[in-house]
Amino acid sequence: MSETSQELYSLLIPLAEKRLLVPRACVAEVVGFSALEGNGSDFAWYLGGMRWDGRLVPTVSFEGCCGERIPETGRRSRVVIFHATGNALPERFFGIVSQGFPQLVRVNPGVLRKEPDQKKNANLPILCQLKMVNEYPLVPDLEKLEAMILDAAGT
Image (cartoon, rainbow, N blue to C red; front, side, top):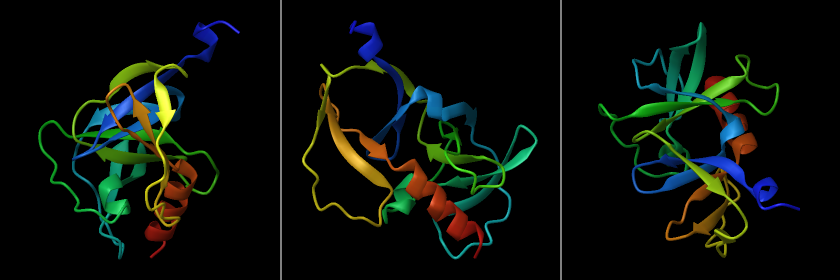
C-alpha cells in the first residue's frame, strides 16, 4: 500500500483549551458565527439553531457537551457544519462552535498514536485522545453527539 493511500485529510478544530481531530469528509463547511435562534432546551451546551444554506442547523458547544465551561464567542469564533452520520437529525447537519478557523492537516500512521484512555466516561462524546506530533487532539464520537443533540432538541 502506498504512503499516500494511508493519509487522511483531516481538520484540527480549535476549542477553548483543546482541539478536535475529524476527517475532512465529515465537514460540510466552516462559517462565521452568527446569531442563533431559540434554544428552548434544558441543556446549556445546546446553543440553538443557526441559519445555514436555507436550514436551521442545531449548534452546540463541544466543551459544554463534555461538562466543561462554555466559552464565550468572539470575532474569531466559527461554526463547523458537520454532515450527520445517521437519519435522526431532520436537517441532516449540525454545528460545533470553534474558537478559530480549523487547520487542514494530512495524518498518517507515522504521526498518530493513541493515548491511553484517562478516566474514559461513556457519557461524553469522545472516542479517544491521540498524540499527533506535539499535539493531543480529541476524536469526537459524532454518533453519540448526534444522539445528544436529538435529545436536547426534543426537550
